Image (cartoon, rainbow, N blue to C red; front, side, top):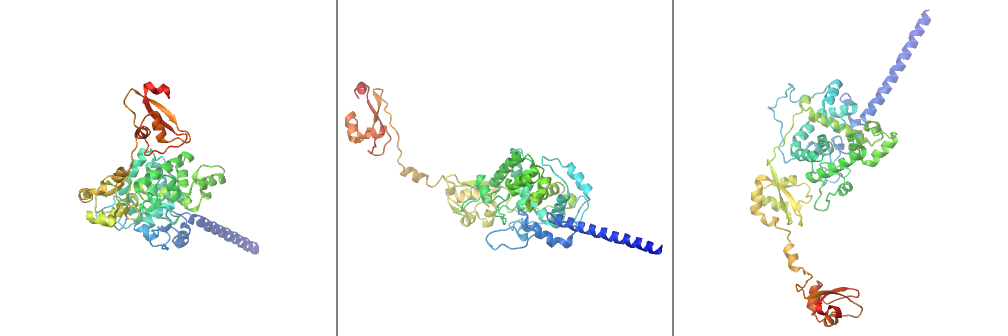
Length: 465
């Protein structure tokens, strides 16, 4: 009996050990899958591996990668680059007098149970189908805890860009939440450039920018212009939403291209649900939509997460534009305005060589409001009409067809045949060479076979020709 009892308990122990081992394997697999898409606050020991996986996330890649750019002249989204997203032009400081209404201390990091997140997501009214799940929660932890300072600077810096983005969204009747894409894409850095050569607030690639009608040349890159790039990005997003009928799907296509989304739809059996096709999308796109939803949430509930916006202290409070037609360098312009050159660079990021090129249409230069009078006084010649206008006008030979005012003259059309000359035609009809040139807007006496000339002759002689 004792032997049977010992055998029974030994067998039971072996079964328990086996089941425990299986559960540990499953837990390891689950953790590995999660780490491919986001960071978990309960797995600090795996941070290095998770960060390596997330380097494939194009738009926030360098929040996790520390590698410097090989080309120091080209800004790349490195961790230090994103963390200085408020720009050295600003003197941004957290207002230490600000008290959190919930009593959180300034440096406290806040998280919540899933039940609280679900309730808050249910309370957010949006045209975008906002979803709370494990992937979104991981990015709430990322932006609300690990990158909390970056989020505080982004929310503070949004005061510079969101007013005109919100206006553009309203004009196109698009969801206001789309403005938060600029946080995911560039951390609100107008001159940001990714390792995939995507540029600007909306991280638009070269071919996409040209297709959207943005001007990109040696002097100008409208992908870096907050106004022009916003209009282009919203047009593209609107078009994608019209194709897929779903904002999460449109965002996925914006990030990875419609081709990748279409392939994922086929592999998912024709589903147009982002969360169903997600596993078939590129790694960065799998993270892109959850990151966006996390930032939408944190912008709705910043105080609940003890997020205290860092507002930039700018050397100017308001801006205006003036159209410049002549070429001018930023260094001489800054000197005449008693400004810093980096202030001009910040206000006009699309001018990639710090030169306003001469153009017929003129360039809308953005300046601080209080510098407009100084500009008008010291740089009046720059706002004159296109500089070649007078030169072109004076050198141009303007030709007009002259129509005789006399009712006694009637129009006759003469078709030139081979061998005829202007002199012979003028003698035939009894008119001068100058008259023929004036009637036909000609600058010389050269004619060609088959050409039709307008000749005005007395009405009484018309029948004889």
